[in-house]
Image (cartoon, rainbow, N blue to C red; front, top):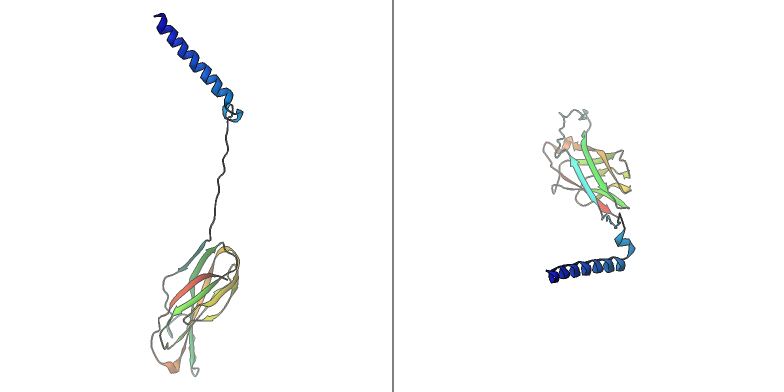
Length: 173
């Protein structure tokens, strides 16, 4: 029994000495610290988002509520400004362009203009293929703007329908 007790006491003593040596060797920051700090890095890469609502609009001449048809005048127009363009970008020196897929020989013209954008300079654009500047000199921001479309038809062009697929893009300059 003495051997067993001596063995247990030796083991306990060995454990206490090892614990004491371990504590003595550890730096003070590990032993008695009640809080620790670490670094957290947040990285923001380029963000560019754009949305347009509603998904489709119709401009009707002469029955639209904003249609302008005057006897003796060849040009007829109709406007709509229910479209909202929303964007967000954290990049400096950006612009929004507009383009459209049009018919090879459209009967009618379509113009677009941004009404009082929260940033940048609006341009009046007659839609055609290829990117055209729509809002230039933009700052990093998020915002929205109403878009006014004007359909322009000449009475001499006759009746018909042109469908434009309009695309807005945010482009770095």
